[in-house]
Image (tube, rainbow, N blue to C red):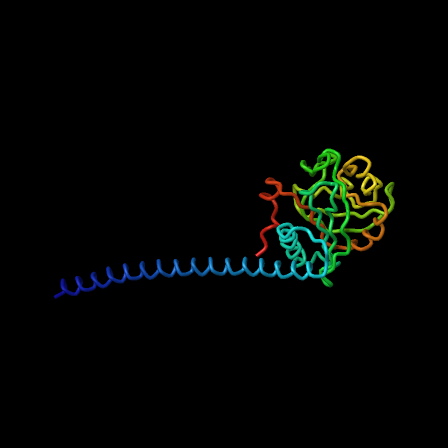
Length: 246
């Protein structure tokens, strides 16, 4: 009798063990599927949100950065805004994929959906000639740095009114203030320079803008707004922590 009872109990335990394992496996699969669905939905939601925002800007303005560049800029903008670092709701986008002969800087009012400026901007002497190709975070490199910045305070220096920008990405642009990489006006960032030399002049790493609009531009973006300097650079794209908003 005892033997029969033990046999029955053993069969039940054996059946329960396999049943529990199957149920556990099914539960894990369901959870993974749900996680993938949530992740996919979040990504879709971000892309749809950015696409809608881009369309609203495009309707009101004749010029905009490309959608892929805008999408990357918005990823970092949202992250910085959610972390409480953004006070001034304008977004500056500089696209170093473009020639220095093109107006590759845009300043966007995120509240009114207006393009406030679309202008020329110089890159560093050792970053390239017409195109920006090499980048550095090192002091005295005379190169530009990519990535996301927050604008700081203004000061008057040898280039007149200038604006500090603080790099938000360690190892990429975090030495910006130490390097005195600032936004300032320069004669070599004017269209007249392009007509004479076939390209813009170059800075020591600063995103220099035309003298004629420098003061107005700087006063528009100063005080904790976002600046994003873009380049389809493999090293930056793989290292940045600001391009994966979800």
